[in-house]
Image (tube, rainbow, N blue to C red):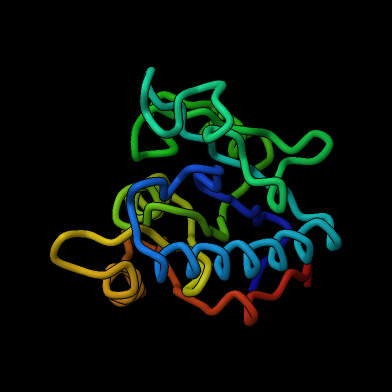
Length: 187
């Protein structure tokens, strides 16, 4: 499934990402998601695949205020060595960031994506990647969010897995795959 032109992109896996955004079930789901992403991350690293971290830089007073403890990437998923961290200020990890430059320099044409804020940052970044000529493998159980007034986090995740699977622009598209089924192999 993954090839030499593939990288893992982890979006907004920060300490306070769901602060005030979900009840006990959403917070428990976040912990489970972190565990699955930690496994996916370790498998990618072990096989030598590039890993890119995306970190949201919130304004002063925001739960992800740049430099605050809540802004830090969770230790289970923290960058190692030369793994780049892309800083963003919007839902789109490509908008006014160094992500396009990193992908072009490394000749990355496929992204395996997991992270937080499904309906905002994960959705927007997946769609934008496809429109910028990249295939996406979204870890079906590797993204989550908080509860919304109308929908639970689980409903939001299920809805996005359904609508993103098969989304395409030309020959580029999104596949939604359980994280355990994502294979990191060159050949």
